[in-house]
Image (cartoon, rainbow, N blue to C red):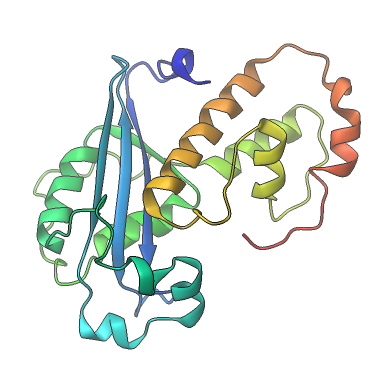
Length: 221
């Protein structure tokens, strides 16, 4: 899924991006893991991933729930797939990695602001305007619009788990909340959604799904 859809935005590459943090508090959370995949208009896929040492301040406010769902105590600075990098280096490399691309994610604003406020790197801004800053694409928002435009009754807040199940996106609960896995899942979700949106089937064929799957009571992911 997706090979033929990478050129939908022919004038722009797309970047799928995710972060893992110490919590949700915008003033206290620290970012300790990042991952991204850039799909170019030429069909190339580039990957970036790193872990970042936390400050004592961020460690002090590590939220127990965040530590649990991200397997923080097992994975922090202890995962061979993620090279450990200085926050200044990560910031600089990601500015370049994102340049002139659309950034796609689940609630991408959260992850982008984690990059802006990356610990100890707050003054290291690029001199050129940030071209992707106002081009963030939230997959769930797009999915909700697609389903509603096709006549589905969609309860809000949007049920990501149900949508992924419907589109055939695999979600391993044990691997969720590791940055690259979430990036790969979001990428699959996006391309399957594009394929679904372009399908010319009679949407009434999905009537049972309307009633049972996409209208399930939301359970927070």
